[in-house]
Amino acid sequence: MMTAKSHRIGRILRSLSVQFLLAGGVVLLVGAYAVGTWVTDRIERGVVQNSGASAALYIESLLPNQTRGAEGSASVSEDAQLVLRQAFQKGILSERVVTYTIWSETGEVLDSFRPEQRGLQYEPSEALLQAWAGDVASRFQTLQAQADHPEATVGVPLLEVYVPIRDANTGEVLAVVEFYQRAERLAEELAKARRESWTLVARIFGLSGAFLFVIVHAGSRLIERQREQLRSQLLESHELSKNNDALRKRVSQAAQRSTAQSEKIMQRIGQDLHDGVAQHLSLVSLRLEGAGLGPSKDAETIMQSLKNAMKELREISRGLSLPDLATLDLRECAAQAVTEHNKAHESNAQFVDQSVGSVHVNDATKLCVYRFLQESLSNAARHAVASSITVELNVEDDWIDVLVSDNGRGFAPDELLGVRDDGGQGLLGLSDRAATLGGAFVIASHPGNGTQARLRLPIWEDDA
Ligand SMILES: Nc1ncnc2c1ncn2[C@@H]1O[C@H](COP(=O)(O)OP(=O)(O)OP(=O)(O)O)[C@@H](O)[C@H]1O
Ligand SMILES: [Mg+2]
Image (cartoon, rainbow, N blue to C red; front, side, top):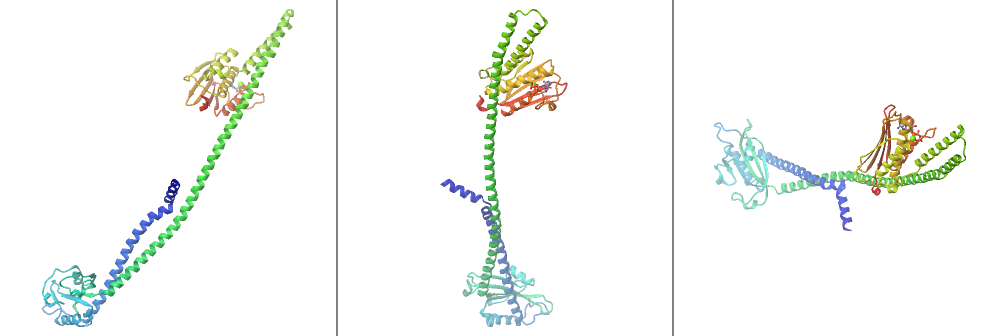
């Protein structure tokens, strides 16, 4: 139960869509965070900048035209300072502006919300330098409790704006007005803009993620289905090949049984010829001798024909009958086939045994080797006109290899193999026998170059 469950979980985790969901989800989240941060930052900066710019415009509109004094000393006129002081402290701006400073180019405080600051010198901040370069600089911040800011503004969101005051003729910056104005509404707007932009980014990324997931999921299911199909086809072909093997085995067994049957019949015929017809012929020969036929040409011819008939009959019966294969191992069986052949054909075929130890194989294999040697040696003796015939036996890597070679006149195997009109089909029969045992019979020959007949048979595990 547990293993089935963990197997299922494993399969789900392996599925492409889940892998996409895990990997793609992380990528999308990181992407959404990066884009969202970038977009909200841009929006915030834009909003702050815009608010600063409009506040600057308002301040500029309040001031009378400024020009640098003849001696070039005063930065902003006393008039202008007065106008600003009144606007910031008593006018409509006083409700919103919490503090202000007018800076000279050297970092000196020309005027301030707190009069004691006048004439003091400070290191110019980055925003102050930006204003001196001619741009309105604005920042959004919440002030911490500080001595120079009234308690009321602590914790309230403020917009800090630096406004350059220009020379009406030359456009040169004469002074910079810095002021903090309450920005609760701006803060609300910013929070709203932030919320909206994050919602938008989340929606866009969520939708595209969902869209991609649907595509990947469909692809993943298709692949899963095809994988299932392949798996079942593989199983099917496995079954088929098992069935094929079983069928092949049955065909081979049937062929072996039929060979065994014909071997039995051949044995019977051989035995009958030897014990029946041959015995009758020897009796006839004895009786003819005993009948006292005078020495005449006819009598001699009859006696000679009788002898020939008996010799041929013995040869035929020897060829048909087999030694008791069950008592012999493979090497003895091969050696016996060579000896029998040499006896019957008054031949001198050599047997070279290269196998090691005794080799035990089943009777069908021994019979096949025996018949192969009988047929190949008989062909060599009958057709080859050879001065040397050799039989080699080799057993290696579960294969039996038997080679019969002669140095006779050779022939063209392609033209002569097959069922022929004259009934000769010894080599064809050998091919069939070898095939039923899963082996092969090959003949190599060229006219004038001798012949090599080779039989290769597998040794099955159940042979030993
Ligand atoms: N060792 C050999 N040297 C030369 N020719 C050969 C040799 N073996 C076979 N042949 C040729 O191949 C032919 C086919 O041989 P195969 O054994 O099939 O038939 P066969 O010997 O003529 O008849 P059967 O074997 O039925 O008595 C032979 O007739 C012969 O011409
Ligand atoms: Mg033959």
